[in-house]
Length: 377
Image (cartoon, rainbow, N blue to C red):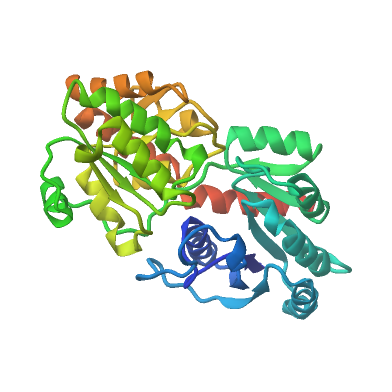
């Protein structure tokens, strides 16, 4: 098939760029002719909460892309939609995680499908986001009008999709593992590199937004600190008021046992943080899914997560991690204490190594090919 793959790619940074690179790799491995259509502007600076949209390090997996799409310029969408018709694609694949992209993606789908045999497939990371904004439903309905096929990456997204688009033609496939980082190294070597001397280390990793629950983890650490010494390693860029979180840490009395790396981590250094930690903590208060869980599995890291969205589907309680209720610092603190007092690391790490085998790009490739084949019958 000739495939146009819409989405961010290097030098744009982040999990979506990683996803596009890995999907491109899988589809080209299967013999498809794939072209990544990248953004010239992904977010306007006014709306982007982070420090930069550009990757500061190595690409992880270098893939070619054609930067064409300006997310806020309708004339650009129409011009490039008409131009890309000349590619005569069999399939257009778009990744969808924010309704902000509904108008641009929907317009491109409409123009590429108009009077052709091109099918449009949307891979849903989220349907309606955790932090809702005006226009979310309208923009998503616009995209749905011009989408033929869907991939839902969790049970919660599948439920939303079937309610939002009755009769949708879709497959449900879990978010595959992000296998583009350096492998785990010995824990003590990683700690030396990061300047950590503590025996016990828990990791919170990823962009810091309210729904990810770092505030709950801070309150849990206040309780843990009274019973055992554990270092909290917070690693990620703050999408919000960093000082509010730091003040919360001070109030909770955990400054002395907390290390904060408040910047985006380049691909070539991600392994250091996962290697240094005993367990990854995901204290989300809401979610559909989280790529951090699949990143943890790449490193065979156990996870303590909350029972929201797809996290209980991915983190198997007592096998590859522990599941606790959301917004419950006492329960979260109790799980961290159990992890250490019952010496769970070795057993849960082995479970994580087994679970990682489920999250393959082969399954994603199979689902895409099956959907296209079924749509032609």
